[in-house]
Image (cartoon, rainbow, N blue to C red):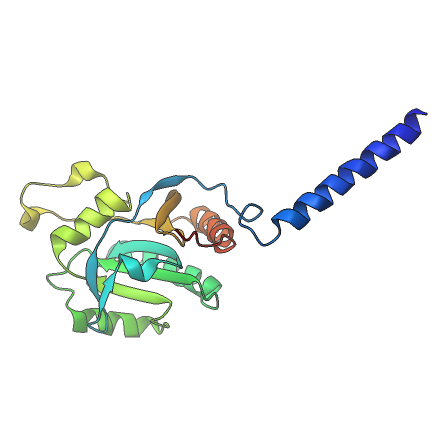
Length: 208
């Protein structure tokens, strides 16, 4: 009797599971990532390597990886962007994927300089965008929006301020900053980033 009851119970549970999968198939419930939300991308307007405007609205619908560097850097930037190239190669065929690399030295990183640097990486500019703009606006985004530099590092005179961070941020298709901060110099952090990108790519964009 107990075996017969158990068989019926298992059959019923199986039917419930099949029913739930059928009901929620095509919705975002089954694909919703558990990555925490750290914030929301604030409004911005910068200039890309081709001299065209780029703003936060251009990120919507894309899973974006964000970092900061400067073209004349001889320290961490070459290694950091070499690691970013690994991320690029892994996801460049994904239609909903994008990398945003911001200059932290816009006084020297003009549009032609950014274009020259970007060309040296031989990447698809629809997948990897290089941005420059006002120094105060760039730094504000890094510290108060993406959270990849400590806001306490800001100084009163922007001319004396300098930002140099190896951390990456991850943004979902709705412009929400997700997961943690990822150290672009550590292999294990790159692997975690890859996993989290895959998770967010499966999510559907929420429309209001």
